[in-house]
Image (cartoon, rainbow, N blue to C red):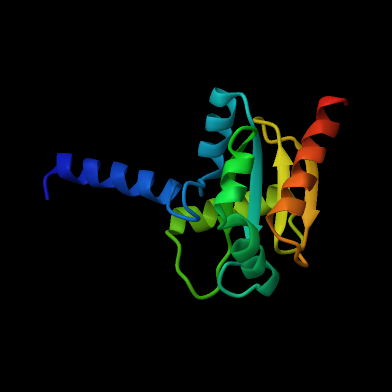
Length: 151
């Protein structure tokens, strides 16, 4: 393969990896920070175990996979989904980066959703998910965002 084809292939695979999970959600933390800064939005970072964690699977099924959720967060947040699967293989670079981000934010349980500014400063952390669906979840996110604006 020519060097040019190799470079083009690498660019496309990085771009695909950054947006490959959960619809339009990013899977690259640094890309999320850059996008949030450019769009003057906050970040919503979901730490999940997509293939082994029952509450994570339930959160995705009841909330993150729904159009109402996507349209409800797009005005205020850039959504980044960081996955820590046990069976599914992620690219080595993504696995390494995800582990580094989890360590940086002292991740203790799955699922955890952290609301952050575009610099990565956390202003709300939500651990676990017991149910309720899109509307209550959006209400929690909006009230957290509103509380942040008054700080």
